[in-house]
Image (cartoon, rainbow, N blue to C red; front, side, top):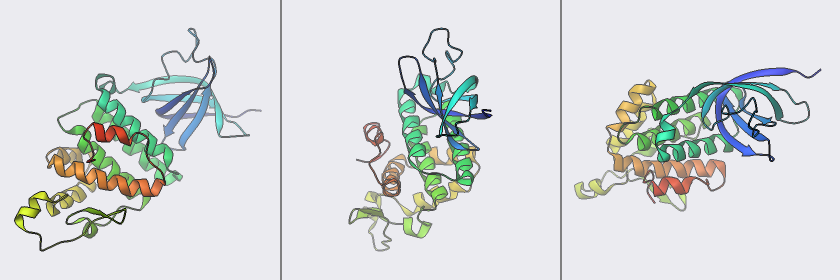
Length: 251
């Protein structure tokens, strides 16, 4: 007898499977990413009509497959829509970048739960955007992802000029830099210290802190953090082009 399961999560990807069906990738707090096929979802009278929108928070019932990780979606109800994404195409692309990162890395159950909380926290901020929110959210997202993966460089490594040496992203401490050069630094000491202090803050306080920081420095920091993440994933991130065009990372 087929077993049924229920999961609450955020739809981070949908893929056309046939003329009538759609494959859904659901980011959940319990099982990381659930893959399920919604048969007949494209039909006008489908029970899934209007329920499988990208980045919606939903509750899904599905039949668990014993042969593969592709389950069969039985029913779906919408818990919440993040309306801020509908009003801002840049935020939508940023959410797509974050979902690509989440999909590209293997998570265990413990770290997967942290990733879900992080992703949902970011999505909450999309509904009430403020100036520079995209840059700040990207910085926080990259920092937390690297921390969860256990590859976030410590604060001492992240003080100074922040250069990429021999193709590897790393930070160099340079105490003899002149005041003129300090102003041209990729990332200043004070910026790094504030960024790392934000990691230990409650989410709302961290966001408030980040939007007040020098945005040019955060843009540079984002580029370096992305280098670390790219090394971990082992390939170019497809949506990275958007980050450059939107001015969220330094070219």
